[in-house]
Amino acid sequence: MKEITEESNQHKLQRSLFRSIFDESSEKMLVIDRAGLVSLANKSTLELLDYEVSAIVGKDISGLMLEKDRAEFSALLATAASAGVVRNYKFYLLNSKRSIIRFFLTVAALCDEKNKLEGYCVYLALANTEEWAALKDPHFFQSVAKKLGRLTSMGQLTSVFAHDIKNPLHVILSTSELLLSSGNLSEEVKPSIVMVERNAQRASKIVKTLLDFSRSGICQLRPYSVNEIAEYCLGLFESSLKTSKVSVVRDLGETPKVFLDPHYLQSVVYNLLTNALESVGGKEGRVELRTLWDQDKKEVRLAISDTGRGMDRNMLDHLFQPFFTTKETGTGLGLYLARQIMNEHSGEIIVRSEPGKGARVELVFRKIA
Image (cartoon, rainbow, N blue to C red):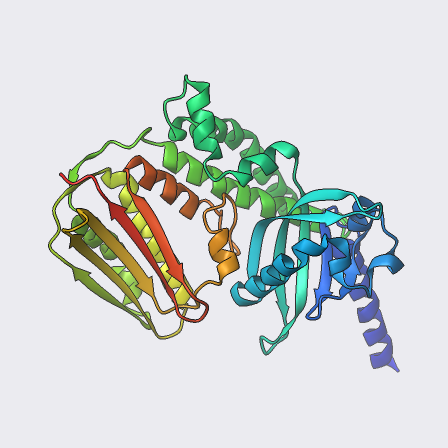
């Protein structure tokens, strides 16, 4: 009898915790099963979309979107199932009056103990008109910098915003950490503070990325060897690869020097190698780094390929969109900034991939020294 009572109390605590974290959360969330049926919708979601629980729960989530967008949403779920999580995906949903609302969706795959897919948690973040227009154009921030005139580069523009955000963000993060360490928070308030801390940490990483990008202003191009860039970046991974199952193949051909900025290019290549190694994960696999000189096209190419999980067409289509990421701790700015940097080098970044067949990223340089 005592065991039954203790189990009953445990279930009550679990329900109370669930209500506190999910149902009472200000973060808007939907939980859907593998078939796309809505299993759960918290209060803030119901209020925003102006629906009663009975009108959503148990119904197909496709009823909340335009018919033309349903195939795209299915592709989004497939991407999340493969990658684990997809962040900041631009999408329209409909409220009870069938009015369109713009959202940035974050979709996380929900799996059981055996890593079998059970469903998805969909986080809804409202997007205002300006944000929507900005992310619709992958060159938005660059065009704004040109229009402002006083700012001579993308780096200066990001620096202004990043420095203005950094200090208040530090206050938010340190205050939330202090509150959590105090031990005086009620069970109702604690999940909200945890959420504040988690989002402040992610925002802090974004700001750091922007500041790193803006550190030196515009790219300072000078004759340099891409092979030296490759060797330097591979050296940074040398110690971590000793205990890894991943083999690294380097094939650095004879290439002429090109005009580039070593500081920026080292950052780009390092991030691309990190992506490749993370894609392979803890499994046995291979990452290749090659350089070659295409004399006919007068191009020097640096290519990084891996035998990792690869990417589907939906992921590739959004790869260079700012803040779009499939990483739990990613900022979604790495590839976006990589393309901006390659544009300043009058070059190009090319990505090819298929699900389960790895990926290949090429940096193309055309300013031969």
